[in-house]
Image (cartoon, rainbow, N blue to C red; front, top):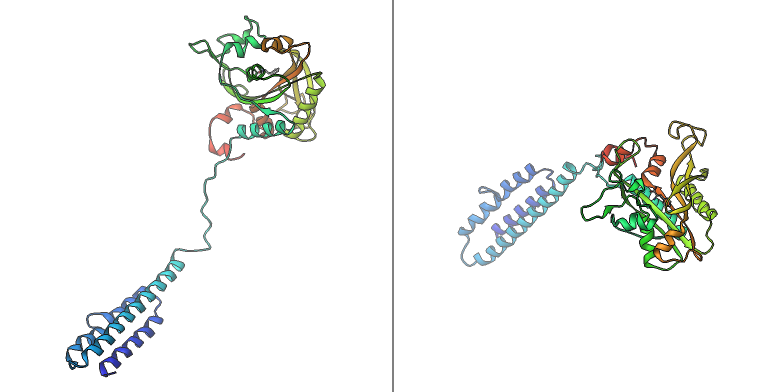
Amino acid sequence: MNEIETRMQAALDQARQALAGITSAADLEECRIRFMGRKGEITALLKSMGAVPAEERPQVGRTANRVKAELEEAFAAAEASLGQAEVATATLDVTLPGRLRQVGRSHPVAQTMDDAVAIFRRMGFVVADGPDLETVYHNFDALNTPADHPSRDVADTFYLPDGRCLRTQTSPVQIRVMESQPPPVRIVCPGRCYRCDTPDATHSMNFHQIEGLYVDRRVSLADLKGVLAEFAREMLGPEVKLRFRPHFFPFTEPSIEYDFSCILCGGKGCGVCKHSGWLEISGAGMVDPAVFTAVGYDPEVWTGYAFGMGIERIAMIRHAIQDIRLLYENDRRFLAQF
Ligand code: PHE
């Protein structure tokens, strides 16, 4: 090694030492100027190559190239580790709270519907589906609804120009299922219904029902009561009681309306149950023989029960919601509670 080579190696060692001690981008820049700048130490040595005797030049040149390469590597490494350290200290403050992501959730009506379907499925019911745009035959005629029944009125039912209507209940799905398969039948049908009602705290033009239908030999009203009582307990808690009141529907005989005991006051009477201790849920009954005849089932052989439920009603009871319209306003402050 001649003198220039020795000085080059010494400068490289110095540069490495200096780089090991830097803590900031400014330190790094200072080092760069000191060793690699136009007036830097290594630069000066490289420039002095001209003075080296011709026979030594190849050997010195090789050393110069190696030193330059190693120096650049050392700077690159120093820069990289400095970069990481800076990222760690400047942008990763592990004490900051995490970013809050807006997480979606299902609507309280959808939640209640899903829960209702799950309860009935556990009891052996199969989910059936039907169209929202129904024929008048399925929505009324086949359900034994007389031609002059008030529910058919244009003041109650939305009709289309082609004569169909928006279904006013999920009961037409009973007809569609029985038309398409022989008994026995055990289905529930969740879905939207439409009625030409004036919206208020308990009425909406568009609401949801879940329909149930069970057809077999020797089905009784007691079977219906058992299933509805079990549903009430699973949906609203083990203390809930069920009661039947006589009613009339064209497609069931006998027909009943059924109530659940008020879960808010435990049946003692409160504002929500209008001090009766009972919450009205919906209608049910034993399938009318005229309905079996309409779908081609022999009413002498087959018996069955059917029930309907208003899903909004149940969601309102579950969450103590006083006005059905809150469910349709899409106010995220309201919906985020469920
Ligand atoms: N479809 C009826 C209603 O909407 C409820 C019902 C269903 C009644 C099944 C009896 C049997 O009010």
